[in-house]
Image (cartoon, rainbow, N blue to C red; front, side, top):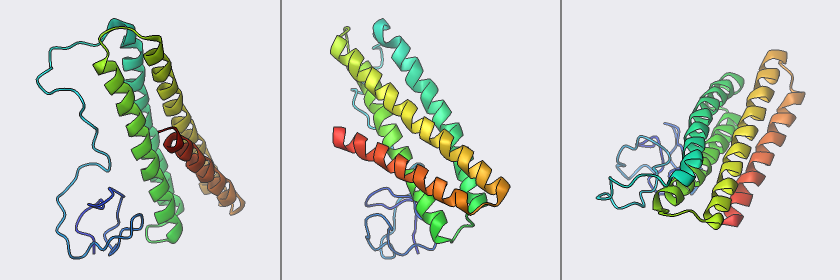
Length: 188
C-alpha cells in the first residue's frame, strides 16, 4: 500500500491501494514517504534574499495574466476531477487512467506557469525575446485550459446522456491533451 498521496520517486498521483507507482513502476511498500501537499512543487529560482525586487513594469501584464490563468486552471481541474469521479467510480481502470492524465496536465501546466513567472522575476529590463517567450507560455497555458474546458463539457454531456459513444470523445480529448503535453516536452 502506498504511504503517501504521491510517488516519492516521480511525483505521480497515487491511490491508497497502489503497491507500485503506475507511472514509474517503483515499489512503494517498503518506503516511508514524507507527506507532500501537492503533486507539483514550484521551482524556486530567485535568490530568497532578493525580496525587495519588484516586477519590471513592462511584464506586469504577463504576471497578472499568468496568475489569472492559474486561478482558472484550478477551478477547471477541480470540476473535471469531480466529473471524472462521477463518470468512473474509483477503482475502475478508466478512472485511474483519466485521473493520471489530469495529474500529468497539472504538472506540465505549472511547469509552464513557473517558467513564465521566473522569466518575469529574473528580468530587470525589457527584451523582445523575453516578451515573445512569455507570449508563447501564456498561449500554452491557454491551450491546456481550453482542453480542460473541452473535457469538462464532454464529461457533462456523457454523464447527462449516459451515452457510451461519448466515451470515445472523452478518449479523443485525452489523446489531444497528451499531444499538447508531448509538444511542450519536445519544446523543452
